[in-house]
Image (tube, rainbow, N blue to C red):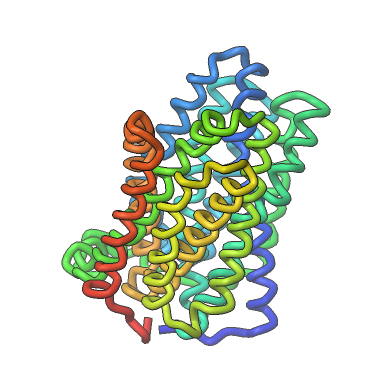
Length: 391
């Protein structure tokens, strides 16, 4: 159920979307590494900021309330709303730096992503045949890895040479420019203002379909598995290798590189292999990587290689799910993609909670749980999930 598309114009849309997502994801991901700088600048305990990050993660469960905007009001309108909400909130911090404005910006950026990401993925899916969707979705996912490889280091340079809030205004301006680019390039489309998200074509269709629920559960399991390790691997590395902050920073670059390569592998292979097969292969390799990681204790180089494989297999798997999910409910694509966001958020929330608990008994058990979740995911992919090749 795709719409005719001007290929040259579509290429410009892809470039504009990657740039917009780099800006938006830089704002989303920079909070983690610069928490100490924000804490010092605001003179507040770092726990006051980490609590906001926990709240941000929990917000993901309500993503469908925002994601359906693109179905009701149109993809372009929703994308512009998302970028506008984000840019205004960051400009406020730049002009009026403070704890409350920072908290508001963090939460509003999350909501902006709930609006923008499903709208863009739905727009992309509306205009791309299912047989080619893995390639184009993977290309725009470069906006995720690119935010760490390009955006976050630039923000670090700005903060290092000025004050903690100095990067907020430039990022806000970049957001406004990205929004202008999307307004000029993305064609106007009509939503279904009358559409009731609780109707048979909306939430009910999702709840009633085992195949749809199975696909959403895959996102939950993947994110649960990864966050179970992601939330504690830094502690494990510090305890095992007595690493410095600089060395932990190196692990972040390893993760960013693995994300980039994982997205490239999706672009190259998912459409050829098939979405279901790619997800099953990714889950299997990810499960193996997860159980190997706790044994990579010989030296830090081996640990970094193991971390690389954990994250490259995770990124390949999670990006492979996007084209499959995009085709399941074509008439409610925005809502479907936002439910996918909610399932990932719920998985990350449970993973973070259980990850720290299991670490008390040894990092090995984190690896066991993550692998077990991947095995369950493989069974669901094989026996429950079905593709809609016409979606």
